[in-house]
Length: 196
Image (cartoon, rainbow, N blue to C red; front, side, top):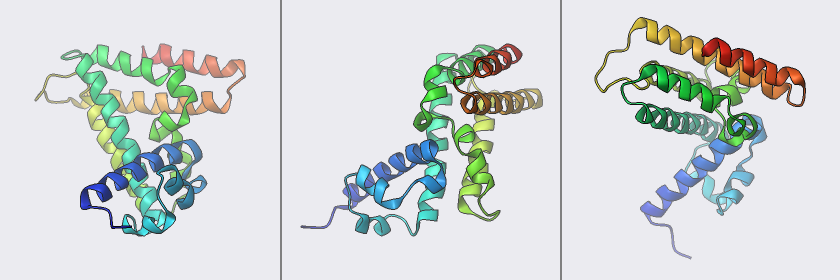
């Protein structure tokens, strides 16, 4: 069998990253294995090292990809609410507390899905760096969500975005941890009211 073309290799790499990002959000960093990721991509384990240097490399890139997906969601919400920051923030909160986001971990916010895992990583790990960079990028995007192109984000908008992010992530994590108990819905309702 011949070698894959550079274009095929790039497609395979992107496919592996998409799968790894979903799996890492659903199972955590330690819950993802190279054989499972490669099998899900329909590729052999032997091909892994043609794309990544190690599992740690894959994990860091999967974390970054998870934030890329989140950024795309934020962009869509902003585009649906042009020039209306308040409406965009309300749409974001609605999405964040939706059943789809709450129950489908593989489609989850990387902050909610991975905070505990990343906190256990060594301080100098590539996964931690990717996570911190993802938060910074998402925060900047969220602070200006719905604003007109070129509009400057105010310090107040950044503080609001950080507060919204922290409260929403905390609420969804707590609600997931108490799924099936009445307190889960109460947590989300209280957070939604506070962010409303």
